[in-house]
Image (tube, rainbow, N blue to C red; front, side, top):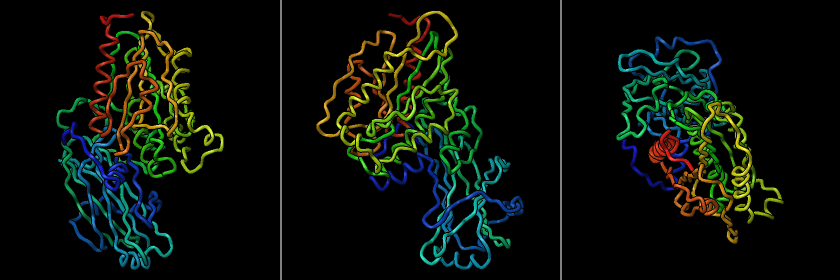
Length: 420
């Protein structure tokens, strides 16, 4: 997989792809997934059986896909035809188990087991598709998949998958601290809490403060479109999680989340090493484009002023101090993250003019996630600071821009770097 390759998505293709980017793993129509609660079946015996199908099914295992979490994702989906569902109601509920072995045949993680739970009448209308997914480091793996009923009837399949190292990877050591395989939770908040840590050291010779300011709302032309909001926020939650794992050797990282369209601060200057990721995820979940208060509607054309006021407040207020090493004053980096943004027609944009001094750098980390994201009104607000643009429209571009950001900050904070 070429890490630098750029993809262009149609809306239909983008919806399918971005759900994987966001690791939003949902059961198909008419089915829900829940953890297996009954006594453990003899899965160790079943997983090594030859492939066979006592229950009609179709197994789909995806090719590895690089996501905005900067991990390669492999998804496993099982489709069960409706006629099989009608029969299964007489034999008891169905369950799905997936386990992964390495090239030597050693199991790497416990089996991921879920129930196939159908609402009344679903078996008369729909086939059911249920899925799970795992992040995988480069290597060769075998996914063992078992669909079984309460009376022991089962279907077994094995699929060999090779996860290749990224071509010309700008961050080849990123996954050094990660397990070979990690299954994902279907709950974004739980994923945030359990996610393994990436290796993102940032060697800073002088103190460094990094303020990451993320706008989770899409451009104003998508106002009211819940699906676009969901996809946009899901992608930038992953981007936030990666940036939160930057580790300056002499500094710290703070996170601020905004809903610029709704003119709301979701959270402000949360210490990335101390905050609870699930709390930030839940704050972003409160965004609802279909529920807008009257005051916001009346002042919609003031969204640019809202964003400028938040940024200027961060410029002038006393910086949170997390550095214990005395010496030179800290370099302050402001990283403004979000998709291409256009404010509502008629909005007047007044660029910020607060003097931030020469010990500050401003970056605009911009993603063009949809074909309509061609403007960048957020950048106009901070244009006086000559922000460096870092493109993150695909996971590969994000990876390269992340490496460029680290390199630029290491150079700027080197002991030999000139000061003011």
